[in-house]
Structure formats: C-alpha cells, structure tokens
Length: 279
Length: 279
Image 1 (cartoon, helix red, strand yellow):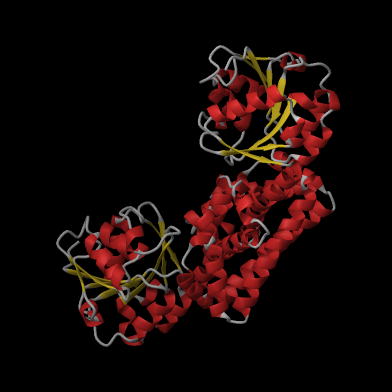
Image 2 (image 1 turned 45 degrees about the horizontal axis):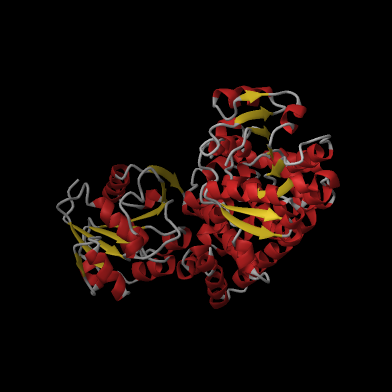
C-alpha cells in the first residue's frame, strides 16, 4: 500500500491511535494533524501521533487519505464544508453513529467517503490516551458501502485488514439500531449507575466497597460528555427505544424479587447467562 | 501464625482460591475440604486447593479455622446445624450478604464467628476458576465485630492482613445497604442488559458489534444464578430500593434526551464522571 499523505482531524484517543498504528504499513506517508485544542496538537507532536500540525483544514483536504476522528456532530459539519478534494481522495470517519452522517454527505464527494465505526475505545480521551494496538483484533463496521467509490472502499478494507480488524458490513440504519443496544444504551446505563451511587448520602462509604464488578460497570461512566452528547443526539430514537427494553427487563427482575418467585428469578438469570455462548 | 487445621466448606472460586492463598503463610496446616458436588471435590484435590476431602461435616467442625464459602442460604443452614466446636475455634463466612447471617448465628457459637465479605470474585465459578491472588490488594468488610471473640477477630484480621487485603469495619445492616448499591444492583443491571439484547430479533447481529464497553457491562451477567438467587433473597429490600434510585437516574436521562436538553444531559454525564475522582 502506497500513500503519500494522511490527514487526521481530531488527535484524541481514536485519531491518535490510528495515526500510530497506520505508520507500520505506511512508513513513507506524511501524517498531518488538525485539532482545535492547542494542548492536543502539542501532545500529538511530542507523542509522534502525526508528523506535523496544520491550522488550515485545506491542508487536510489535500491529503490522499482523510480521517475524521472527532465527535459525530463535528463530522457532519466538516463533511458539509469540504470545498474541493482530489477525485481519488478517500475520506473515512470513525464516528459511533452512521445514519445521519451518511445522509449528510454532499453528493459530489459521496464516492470519496467510506463510513466506518471501529468498535474499540477506552474511557480515556485526548492524545495522551492514544496507543498503538487500539484497533488490533477488534471489529469495524463499514456502512452503506455501495455508495462509496470502488478504489476508496478497497483502500479502506485494506487498511482495516492491515490493522488486523474484523470487518462487518451493514446499512447505516441497522448499524444505529444495533449500536444503540451494544454501545449507546450501555453508556447511558453506566452513567446512570454512577449517578445513582453518587447521589446517596455517603457515596464514599459505598464506593470504598467497590470490587471488579462495580469497576467494570462504571468504567465507561468516565467517557467524555461532549462526545456522548452528540452520539445520543444523533441516535436519539434508537437509544430511547433500547432503554425501554432494558427497563422492561429490570422491571421483570423487580417483580420476580418482589413476589419472591425465586424459581422464575433463577430462570431469568440463566437466560442472561446464555449471552456468553455467543459473546 | 500457627494453625494445624483449616476446614473449607465450598470448594469453588472463593473457597478454592482462599485455600491456595492461605498455604503461603500456613505451610504446616492441613486443609480439609467439603463440597456437595463430587466433580468439585475431585477437581479441588487435583488442583491442590485442599489436602483431603471429607464427606462428614463433623471433620470440618474439628478444624481450628472453618471457612464457609458457599451460597448465603447455605451459610445460615450450616451455622444453625453446628453441634459442637472447640472454644477457640474460628468460623468465617465469605458471603455477599451479612445481616441475616449475623442474625442467625446461634448464641453459643457467636464468639467463634467472624462475618466477612471479601469484595472480590470473577464471573467464573467452581474449583477450576480458583486462583492464587484472588484476594490480594482487595477490600474485605468485617461486620459486627464487637460480637466476635477477641482471639477469633485477631486471627481473622491477621489472615486478611497476610493476604494483603484492605480491612473495612461496618455493621451488617450498613454493609447490606452499601453492598446493594456497589454489587447486588450492578449484577441485576448486568443480567437485565444481557436479557434485553438476547430478546431482540437477531441478538447475534447485535453482539457481533460488541466492544470492550459491552463486554465489561455484561461480564457479571455470567454469574451463577444459584449463588445470586440467595443473595437477592437475603438482601431483597435493599436491592429493590437501590434499583429504584437507578431507574430514577435512567428516567432523568430519558427525559433530558426526549426533551433534547443537551446542556442538561452534559451536566448529568459530567456528574457521573465524578465517581472516578473517588473510585
């Protein structure tokens, strides 16, 4: 694979880690970074996530590969404001929602764009959270690929294969429904769990007892509110619907326990156990 | 520390791991194991969790240190049926609830008993899940210690210190309230999350997208239904109350999103972020 220039918009965990990982098989490419946050650009240079920083998005638009690694609202803003890019230029985003993004791409650059969602991340953010290996052996969803150009799609597939990722194809509508259950709702739950403990009289005494279970359940409650605001906004309907299903399950639990139906409770828990046969 | 005999009732993850860990500083003690499950007793011997197996609980009651590492209902049954033990004998349990257990100890052996809850575990169970190091650097709660005998309490404190555990003291009532929030409710949430996904039309397509967040959130949904049935049973009131608080938070999230109050949503998420300042 030969690419001369890669432009990364957003030098946080996702964009920064991708910069680090791509260098392994794009040793000759120049990596140019763009980020509103000046501390981030400084950190990105000192951590060698990119080769140089630009404050002019036009420098990014001149790159052969453009990576949009910013909150999903920002992705839509940038896509709408692209004035001119090369015919063979490839643009990808790494956003957690796909439908509104796919719907908002201007027609003249539709073939240049490949919508992707790497199912990876940590609760940390910013360039200092970036690490080589974030993408390895993880799943990435490619959406509405029939609308992308052939060379663009092949390049993106090659990139994710080189990163040793498992590629799944899906229409953006199904993606957003599935992502609500597997990622967006779990984040809402984790935030709610953290808040329910924090609002007790003496949260410190409760948290002093935290073991691995609670740590795991509350880990993603550390996620960035700015990033998650725009995910929840773009996937509002699916998120609210998935939460209805979840609350229904929790009400089943409450009813079984309230009625002391312990046989039923055991069956309900055994049903939940089965997720690990396919997870 | 010198102990000649340790009896462990229940040779699963908790009891088995304790057997392994105690040997480091009790090299001369004989470890005797008891378990209803014959596969467990075989495994426990081949994994050297204990030195020998007995099918007679009286052999356990002759030990200097008795460890009850079985579901919390079973702990109460055993405590009620202890006929005679030595005056200096020490009995501990490792159960996740404490109030009903503390209330059910017969008066004649109250001083022999120290109620403990090590805040550790994994979603796995059985002797094959046991490992040396499960207890290291974890927190253990000792409850109602003023009712335990002096030598018994000192022995138990010494044991947990040797295991490099952080000891917290609490009355059993407060323990059960706190444990509901930090452990029991999170388990109910994890089971409910797993079930809400499993009951969708095509759970496999959803689960194919699972990243680290969902894996963490659903990990404890693999926990043993038999064990958790009796925990939920014994801590019913506190568990149901904590779930009310949690659902209230989730309803706040729903309302903010429904009303597109994104400023409010960001504040609510930032509040949740704060748990990690004390966790």
